[in-house]
Image (tube, rainbow over all chains, first blue to last red; front, side, top):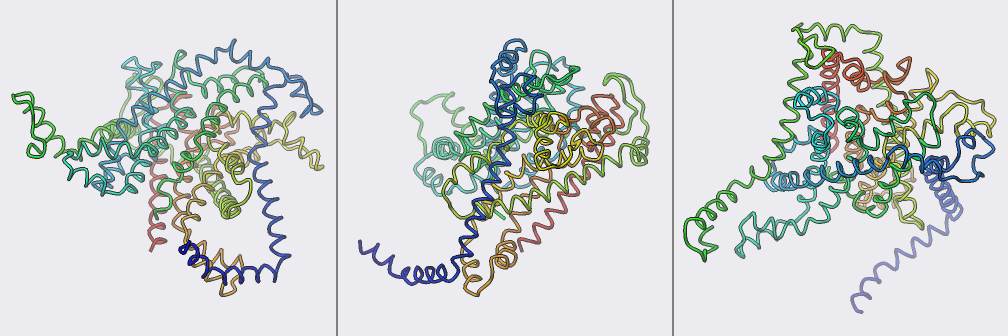
Length: 296
Length: 312
């Protein structure tokens, strides 16, 4: 109680001063508040409306899509989804996308987490740069040689190449995120574990790793999303059996006339799973996207 | 190590295990880092060397076909190509610069709006996240419908405002700005998240001090907040810039091969992809890629220099 009391005392004059400023210009601050609300609503609408439009169109017949009078009022149909999922075999593509994203993320975590740990603890900045180079190089320049080698090995069209190529995207991401995570983890815990008799590797396994679950979740989720969304590598390296969702959607428009309803249903099928994951793991995604941004 | 962990079992295997563990612990630095580095190294260095080699040959058609060494001829062809290469360089630059400028300015404005807590913050954050995680190809398809000149919502909206319909993606001059708009829609949220993290990490004191001295909100932003945020802004430019230079998915998804029939949105990445996989001109495309790579490295180096200067 005394503590609380002590804390409130010096703040009292501050609060008075704030009240005074508020009284001096109430009109301006109220105008700013209104402006802020309007601006925020505009931003949200700008970001959400296109997605909403896609969702609406996926429930329309193609006749309704062509009818401007039925922009918002129409009889919804599930036909597009039935078409996409059954006739176009999207369940196979969904499985392919999931499998490639899952395996490439898991393997990249196995390779990337220890590497990030070593690079963080021994400040191996130059080595880290080698791994991060993978993020900078345009994918096409790697695809030609990869395609050459893997087609000679008769591996194009298999899951292995696809997973390897996606790991190439995932690994730098995981190393980058985990390095900034390990940088922020205090050294003392590991040191005291070593004093208590653990070997350095033992301390990493039993102390550091369990403490890094949040960081690994962040890195894993982001790497899964990047792999799920990847288009270019799958466009070249996937075969008819390993086609992933983004390539499957792209194939949709190569026919003469576009089946808009079906296309929007397909686009929705690709984006919905990833958005649901994103909604539940919001915190991790934000921390992953901003990892290392504020270190200066 | 054997002193710290006295072994209960005796014999060769235990000894070997202990020796291995001691060895592993001594060399853990490289033991941990090497697998990832070798993986990336093999997948980068070999392909880069190969691309460099291919750029000096007349390789085309099949990757297995024989090719001749032609020296710097491909580079000469590419660098004197004013029909495809230089326009592609121009488009890459204008796409990146315009998109980046819009994203940084809009991103900063939105981050400032979100800076101080408010009711409903959660929902705004969700809205910011959705474009960011949406699959770019699907996003491209979505915009194709919205920007369709005949049935798209964009022209319906313009109609309500009394503005005549626009060709958007199918116009020769309007296609590139339209794709820039899509990029801004999808990636401004990322800039917002990065800048917001930077703003939240700022200490309140300089801003408070400026307020005490009677600085207006604008003055406080330009003379206090912005200089302090400069390192974060440069990180955002760096991260977004690399990806914007390499944009491929939405361009290929909305305009297809060659960036449309008049190459309206053909950037360097789309051009190189088309040369490699639509026309199988490996020699030429490799030369384009090497030049492209040099552009990327060059602009990154410039930015990192700026960042170092800004942190000082």
